[in-house]
Image (cartoon, rainbow over all chains, first blue to last red; front, side, top):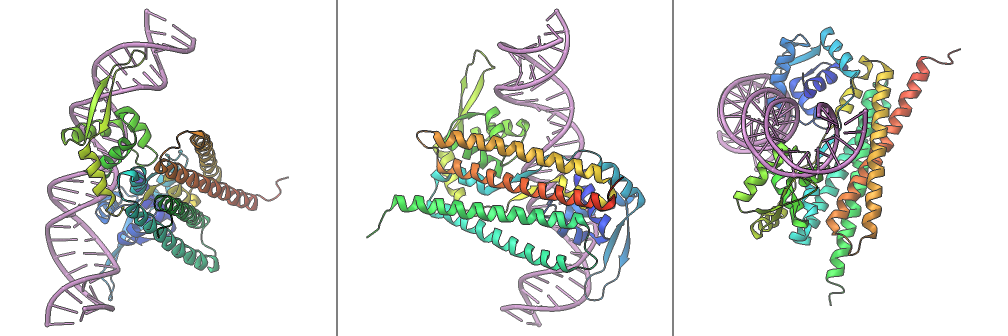
Length: 181
Length: 181
DNA sequence: TGCCCCTATGTTGATTTTTACATATAATTT
DNA sequence: AAATTATATGTAAAAATCAACATAGGGGCA
């Protein structure tokens, strides 16, 4: 039972779901490909933590909908009593920024502009989703709200930073070629 | 040449360093253990991207100080022209929060309190470091500042979120046992 | 003196993760 | 009509990452 397994159980503790949907939902918090999810679900099922029923669909391919079992819930319960390991982030952009002196300012600028756009997109998407959730009756579980809010805080901060960094870069660019006439 | 390799080259493009120090410096941006760093450095050296000299120390064990070569710098240059892959975060805490209904509120509260303390520590450490850097003459490269500022933005946001989340949790706790007399 | 911690480098084996291969249905686009 | 995209599930092999083992000098502590 690794962290990803618990993550899948965690998602399933709120609602039954297919492997395909679990794969998409877990991305923001623990990135994983379907090739990792499907075998893990089978493993969880053979351990009795989850079970599935086949759902026939007419407009899309059939799917397996997994739900958590009492054994799975018990596993989550004991997992929750243990401390969480430290979060970690892998961000290629910062590695590139660190050696920016080696390349062209225009390239670095493009990298930062891409990040600004990325953060804006994510933030807009999240805020639309938060809007929907705030109107839901009955209100969604607290855990869901905490997660969405964390993502919102994160992308707001990332957007602020990347915009600030871009301004720093443009200042630097202006210093290098002042008043081109 | 994977991202970690470029990350090591990136660090070395600013200053020569030992594998041990590279290992510690790259943690915030691309976590890696020494067992991954040392073989990679040897590989980079055999490819001509870096070279090392043995530095004898009297108070500590001797070390290999690596520096980047022209080939290494050229590799960085072409890497900088390519777009950066999307950042990703793995955070066990949010997976636990999502299934908080399965456990005790006191346990969840402890998890969040730990995160608050963690963010405070990181932030204080960073701000002390930023203070030192702001006084440096000559001023450090822009890349260094961008990185430290990103980390500052991040931990400020993480602290704000975790404090907010803790308040939400306490509210929930008070609702469950109102006016205990 | 013995034990642990920090520095410093390395290897081995297990686990995790990614990439690529593989198949299939339905809707949309060209 | 053909190609592409989204849904849906799976496997195999490669690559990346981590945990553990291994060695070694110096300092601090009990």
